[in-house]
Image 1 (cartoon, rainbow, N blue to C red):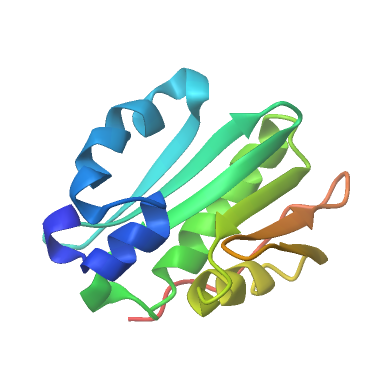
Image 2: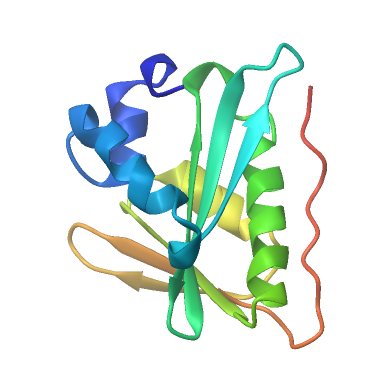
Length: 144
């Protein structure tokens, strides 16, 4: 899937040089670090990854959807499932670390309907969502 993503998409997701993207996966996919979800096409091709990384009582969420499949609801669907997994694992606070110009991730976080907090710095934006104790977040299904 990384081969079908632009350098810009890989840099937004991994916060580093695009050529280093593959070396992050073993850490991200290790279950003791959190949970990962994948989105597949009907033809069996991987088109999206979502990661939930444990951080004490909170969890960081991160998404990557291949460029040709962006803006179809895949990231929103992955995020919705990651929020459910976070709640099931006792994390009511999740956050995404992104760049201030990454409007796609901000829009996806807003789509959860949860109250959000924003922490800006020069090079990073942290968007934090806190869910109600018993709330299960729901988003729309992916568009085709």
